[in-house]
Amino acid sequence: MKNNKVKIGYKEYEIVKKEEIIEVKGDYYGKTETDEEVITIANKFSQKVQNQTFLHELLHCIASKYDLAVNQDEHTIELLSVGLYEAILDNPHIFTMKDI
Image (cartoon, rainbow, N blue to C red; front, side, top):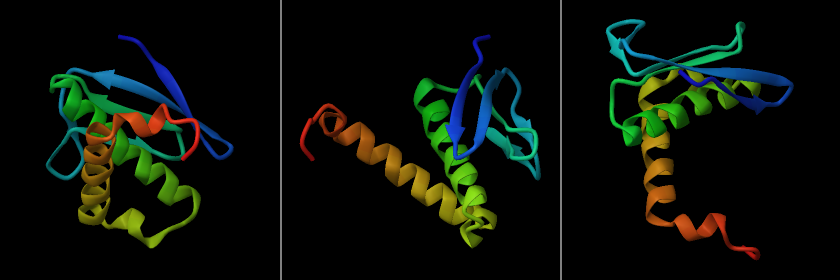
C-alpha cells in the first residue's frame, strides 16, 4: 500500500487506500476526515472508480476549507466529481496545453 499526500490550503491530507468498502452511512468508496487530514479510498474497485472517488473526496476537502454549504450535499458533490472526472478523461490535452 502506497500512501500519498495532497495539499488543500494549509492542510496536507494523507491519501490511504484500503481493501474494504468504507462504512459511513451505508457503503461508500471513500471517506474524508478533515480534522485528521486523511482521505481513505477503497482500492477493491477499478482505477477509474478510485480516481473518481478521489475527486469526490477532494471536493469535500475544498468545500470544507471554504465552509461551503455544498459540503453537506452528497448528491451535488457526487455530480460535480463525476462531471469533473468525465471532463478530465474526455479532454486530457487541456493539462498539457501551455496556453489555455
